[in-house]
Length: 344
Image (cartoon, rainbow, N blue to C red; front, top):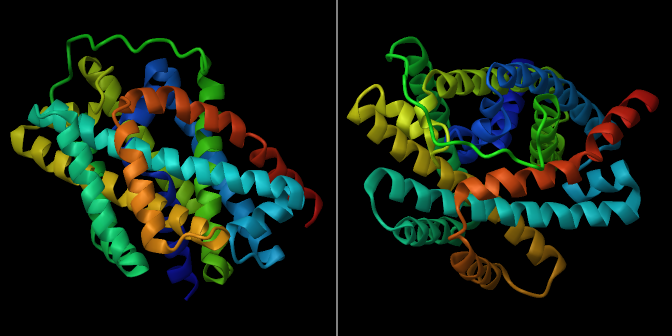
């Protein structure tokens, strides 16, 4: 039972962080690869922080007997600031959905040459169908697609690093980001941004992760994230001509041939769908808990609201919006470490 819990927690941690922004290479490009070899050193730092903070989160959650993420925020920041954190998470979930739908549009445009709006509308429709079946639909899609996503993305990146011929071109210039201009701080911001999502997932699972082996699972999950990120980062640096693309890992997969590229596109699109469905379900259920709208009406309003603004470029969302949420999430990291250390 201990090892089953360890595996489940590790997989949950990886699933909470390794969304489509991760698998597409866009997050790794913006937060790490644009710093060159130092970006790989940043990935090592983020791996350590993911493991340490994952252990601390599970430990605090068990001590506080947490059963929901608003309860976790109340303990972490007190009731007043916990409400602000709850609101921040809702905005973060909304932006996460927007990023995935926008990324789908970029994928259809870069690989198939279609208008971005074909991908946006199709993805929005699939999300609506999954959310219509509520929790059952979310669990079924995640159970089928997430293991496939992890195995295929990691396999393609590893094969590209060790088998494909190295690139000799120069990519589109990745413009300096005034929000993040230091490789160490970029690594910290990346953990800060993703830590918020991981807190939501762990706290929502309640007693399911308050068992023996859960803390070890958090450490192993952090290590797995580091391995995935390092291999994707190495692949991007090996092929500098892909830097600056909206979906750089599709171009990396193309180095292995047309079929690997095609399958990577399919798996990546499915990854975007699963990430958006997870965010959407969490957001809709939270709105229903605190508001007067029912589930179906909230889902319809959310998806209709996302359509007109999903045309924002995927890379711009990752480049500017994600780091801003990383700054906002910086308050969680010291709070977790302080409370874990002082209230043992």
